[in-house]
Length: 95
Image 1 (cartoon, one colour):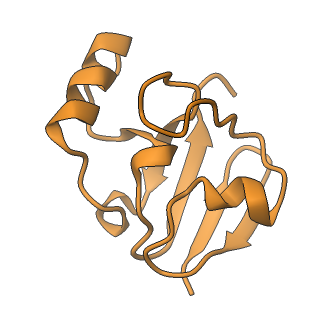
Image 2: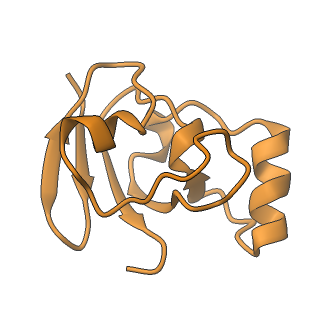
């Protein structure tokens, strides 16, 4: 199973392949806030520090929303919109 390393806390959480990252909240209370869980609020904004290729690609709606929020770079994602394919290192934005 893939590992999710959360910075700066150093939490390492193992999740099943193809999991939505909102599962982090159910497995262990994390520092990633999840609001709407539908890609509309931006509460779960993360920066992918390593392993961006191990997440499903962002669709055009997510990319447009991230640009509206001021995060057009590919390394920023909404955790509720990502499916895990392999190991990643992430950091909640604002941490």
